[in-house]
Length: 154
Image (cartoon, rainbow, N blue to C red):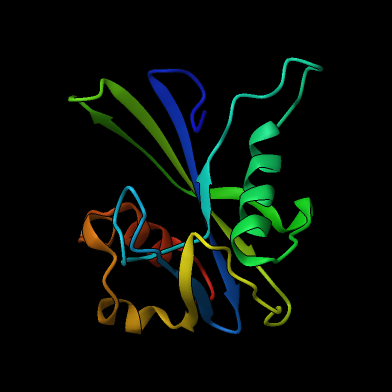
């Protein structure tokens, strides 16, 4: 399951920042949402396995998603406070989405190895944002645009 419950999901995205640039990934043509459009690393949190209680499990989910999608291992001390918080209700599916954006400052450009969920990647400056197609998420009130332009050092 790619969500917390049948009616709720937590979507987390990260703006990985290095020297005034941030990493974007192009979604595969087979993506269920926004195929062939650009995105930030991240994804849906999954309900924790009922083995132990977990504090701040969402951070572990974010770190896992970044590593799965980019091959980049991020330490928890690089993830501090959210730079974006929003919600979206999809009436047709009766699905409530909580969206959280994080800024992750990296000391140098890491080696990126994208997963099969994406077809390419690039590092861009904020002023080049409009040259890439992010779909509704890149619109003036879109969550990716909001995250990128909330990030400092860009």
